[in-house]
Figure 1 (cartoon, helix red, strand yellow):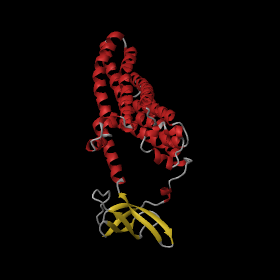
Figure 2 (cartoon, one colour; figure 1 turned 60 degrees about the horizontal axis):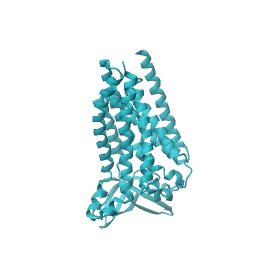
Figure 3 (tube, one colour; figure 1 turned 120 degrees about the horizontal axis):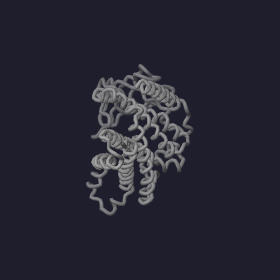
Figure 4 (spheres, rainbow, N blue to C red; figure 1 turned 45 degrees about the vertical axis):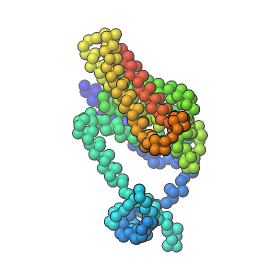
Length: 361
């Protein structure tokens, strides 16, 4: 028990140090592509002092942050029925401010101030996990933070510097899986069974992605944001075509991990009855079938939900079924849902088989 405690201390120390290094890497390296001209603009916070005008509002605002802090400026805000920003006097907003020199500037309303609410919501969510889950919840929150830091400060900067998105995402998925599961379950047999099962699930996802993408003639070049990436300087064609693969893998990793943990934990509990390999595997598979059914529904509905508004739009336009079913965006959703679900479904019996072998009498 004391040795396990020492292992955990070393593990959390090393993984925390790794997060610090990743943050340094993400913040200090040059991504080496053409910068967006908007990055030279300033986006300060401002407080609305007065509202002038009608359909195209002119707001009088006091700039609260940045180079021009304390100055009062006029900014434009075009108001529609579905206005993105409908400011009130005294409200804080973000403005897009360009200072041209000689006292000339251009400015318009960019958005509401949302960052404070986002940070508060994130803290409350992590607190909810900790309160309900206790120590296990805290360890789960730690794994979630590690995953976020790894994706934001390691994976994305490495891709922007010219690395292979698919290869890097697979490696990062292995890293996130290992750290998350060890932080939650410790150095137990079921942890290694779950990690191995997740790796098998990722391998199956890769296989089905290649097969389905080829059958549907879909590549990363079909994603809607492709043109924007090219305009912003991300011109590596081979890397662009891999981004869809990466997005699906990251989105489905949690479901795959959840499935393998459930199966491995159940197998470990069942094994306490003293079953041999055959009986243990049969019992694990009975439990696995229920787990797979519910998890598959969860994953497919999650991907379908992201496409829900578009489906309503198609219905309102009364589009021809043949035209609709052959659209590339429908093909992308099928690729997302089926490839990810297939990997998750097949990792479950693989985990049951491995767990039965490890925990056999």
